[in-house]
Image 1: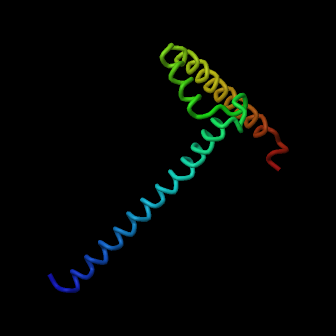
Image 2: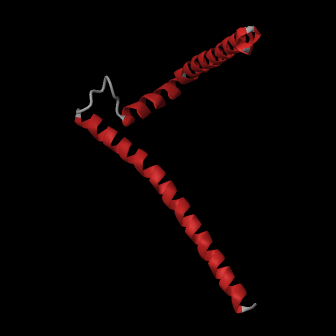
Image 3: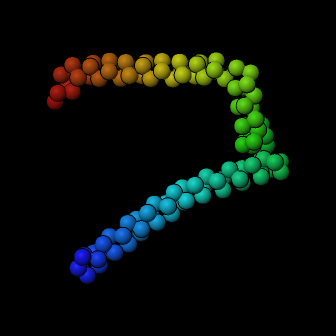
Length: 111
């Protein structure tokens, strides 16, 4: 190998390391803010500063989720929520298509 090839390889390696470093820093930043928000939310909820009726702490939410899964209620609630979401999406899509066809058939829309 020539010294020029070695130098080019070193440059490629350095660029790749910088790229990986940027990705790692970006991932860390993306993890940092939500973590701080969750920690602050838990601390404020535990201290009683935030009313539990309005903002349940993350630990209470996780506990309630685990209880619902263990009791088997979560599956029923999930089925109802998914059914509502799918029906709402279908109804909205149908009405949007219907209105689009009606508007498209109007002569005024061609002008």
